[in-house]
Amino acid sequence: MTILENQTYDVERALYGSKDLMVRNCRFDGPADGESALKESQDISVEECFFNLRYPFWHDTNLTIYGCELTPLCRAALWYSHHVEITDSKLHGIKAVRECRVVSIAHCDIDSPEFGWSANEIQMQDCTAKSEYFLLRAQNIDFARVEFQGKYSFQYIENATFTDCRFDTKDAFWHAKNVVVRDSVIKGEYLAWYSDGLTLEHCKIVGTQPFCYCKNLRLVDCEMINTDLCFEKSEVEATLTTPVLSIKNPKAGHIYLPSVGQIIRDDPDSLGEILVGQEIEKEKETTKHA
Image 1 (cartoon, one colour):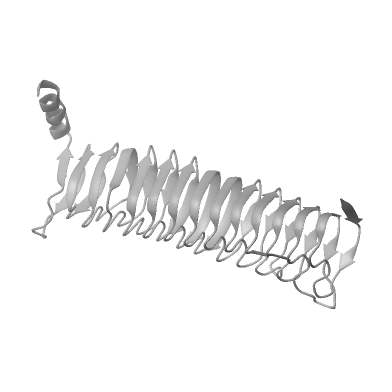
Image 2 (cartoon, one colour; image 1 turned 135 degrees about the vertical axis):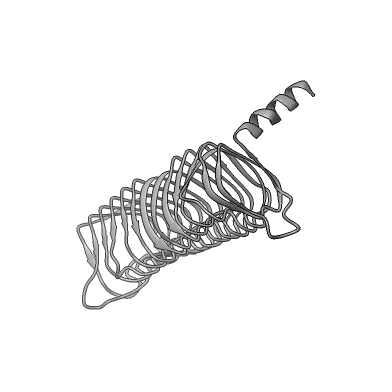
């Protein structure tokens, strides 16, 4: 493996097409303002480097990034790359990790609008992230202990698992398919509209009008705080541990909860059952003796 240390690169395609390369403590910055520093490269390790120029990692294979800083001027840093591992780094440029496959990200700080679009097989753990349209159309996702803040996250995603996460987000999980969220907190408006196959286990949900127009929705022992107009036109099986402000026209299924402020039924196709307080106990007794 060739080792490059303590260098500064600013020309166009400075290390284009490299193979078996270690880049350590280098800067990609300067007046030449060159793009695509490591494009079309293979078996590359980058450590403790500073990236202030555009498009450094396109079409790369077997890429490891450790302890690096990618500034806001490092736009579209990773596209079309696969088998990528990123740890202990700052990813602060817009549109990173697009159309990438087999990506692992750990202990990173992400501040990147339009991050992770159409990524496939992406893992993330112990990270913080700020973004808009975060992971749009991504597939095969596994997140643990991720704190996220932003808008329109996880839209059109498929096949995902989220564990012990904290999301402060609006319009999250719209049109999502086959998603499981466990032991997490989700705060925001209009959660998971038009989703199909979404399951939440032991989660806390905060905010107005969640879970409308959903199919195959499951909530297992979840808290819902300051939630109103829930479950409109949704197919849902839910066991809630807290009251909700209002439930509107659930399409099908069963909702178990200790109390509800208002039940709105103004749609003749609203056939979902709402079982409150003592009704839950009666249902349990009926099931026991059946």
